[in-house]
Length: 263
Ligand SMILES: [Zn+2]
Image (cartoon, rainbow, N blue to C red; front, side, top):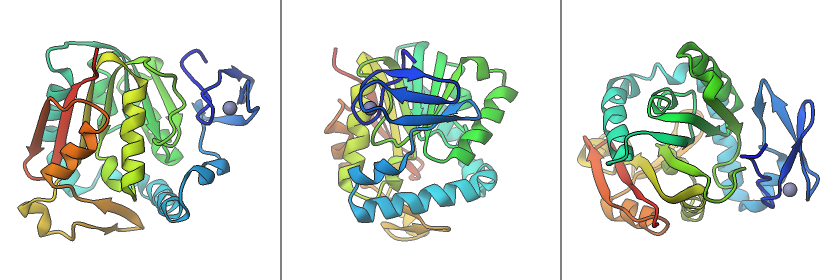
């Protein structure tokens, strides 16, 4: 409970048997399969209607597709490369982290590897089905005892300011349906990071390679919105919230931006 806050007003929470209660607004948040759930209907009120419809559409698609996600061919081929470059960019000259969070952890494709560079990992996602699979994965790699999974909206993290040593977000920002929400997520990542804390953020690259497989923005199967960034767009997005020390493309597939929050 010490590491959690109400996502709506940042007040402290008190733990009950199966729910968590905000000490200020008195909202109740259920705990489902050991996962605190902050995805409540009131979230609609912080979004524009169109944004919220698209996010809900993605949430449903992610729940339905959770089991197939890890078997997507492109992802299976590119994951080892992406993992290598992501960990390298995140670590910089730092070796190991105390508490690391991944915003948009999905089924734990990357989170299991982040667990090898941090004492404690926090995985945040808004698909409960994906988090259930993520829990199984963290159990199978022996890291569940030092993992906290949170069912929450990346735009409103249930975490206090400046508590994390590292934050990663892999291929989340491209699925946010507006500039406003992309900036809000980057703002949240910056808010929860400690001074001097490390971050890495990746998102789709609008490159010669990806031009062959769809438009600059569009919809994936099942109603998942995506946006592909030029270098300038991706740099502008991240640097509005955090200093960009490094910006690289992983084979024209995703951009990786990394750096440290100002001390
Ligand atoms: Zn509250």
